[in-house]
Image (tube, rainbow, N blue to C red):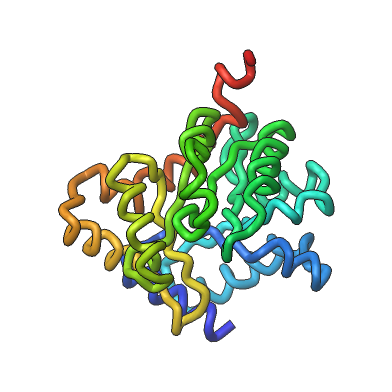
Length: 232
């Protein structure tokens, strides 16, 4: 809990007032904790109030496509964000050259089950970035992309950094995530925005990636699929 409070202080210092807790679903399943996220977040929120840290923490989770067979719709609802009828989940692109076909099937399954998709760290999934038209196809059916601030700082290698910058420059990114894990891997949203400015990418639309856009996702949600995709 002391580390959680310290991490929250770093988030506030970085300019953040709301965060989503996104533990990996695979770890929650492994430890039988999938149903306890909300209660644990409430415990953390109480500790933050007691410590005078002005940060709101929302319960959520980071889903991998190969978690889906173990989850029913109620499980997905428990980790989703947004208002009724426009709920969405954070679905991570596979790392280390993972199963791209399985991932794309997973995004389609999540949408078929009534949830929109926010795709986490696509820049770190080389097969996705190199597959002709794959990113564009996801965007066409209503998915949104979230790149890690740490990628923009080069912390995951030059390939991920270049891919993240390219996606932002192309206007394909909707959110920059802190991807903070602990005080020694803290929030870097401010530094990420500064890094983009160093690439000549700046202005209100870039600032929105770490502020207005994620807030709108929480408040307004995301459709499960684009209307054209449903008609097809």
